[in-house]
Image (cartoon, rainbow, N blue to C red; front, side):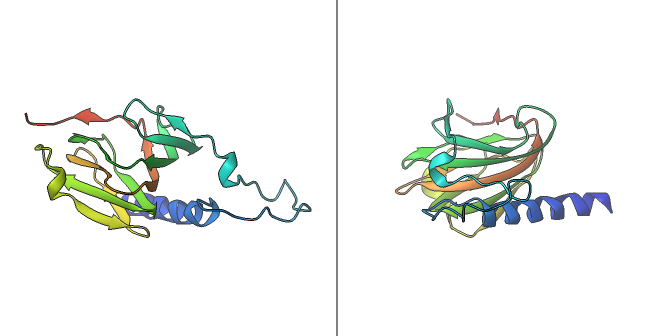
Length: 157
């Protein structure tokens, strides 16, 4: 029963965060909000970090490098693709904006990727090989997973 509860819990957390974390422009909430009741960051307050892969990330919850639940926003800039790789654990992804392109297998072939528009829910199953990225437009994702969030290369040359 626990194994079916955990993925449902991740999806619930992902959907709640997707509804709470604004990606586009938004007006500031009323100044009389109780900080003990709610915390928020406006889009210009989100701290994005440039990763070696060229993807920009913002950690929302947890620490992806350590064991435990994490939530990360990932911003794929146009014309950037990962090469075939896999993660040790399942990852639950919501496409928040743009189009995210995904492929499977050890052969890197961006022309065979499938477009996933905003609103798409994706599960990357642990230890299964995939590659992904953005083509003509930026794609912003919310990724929920169990750390550590490592990526192991798996490309056939």
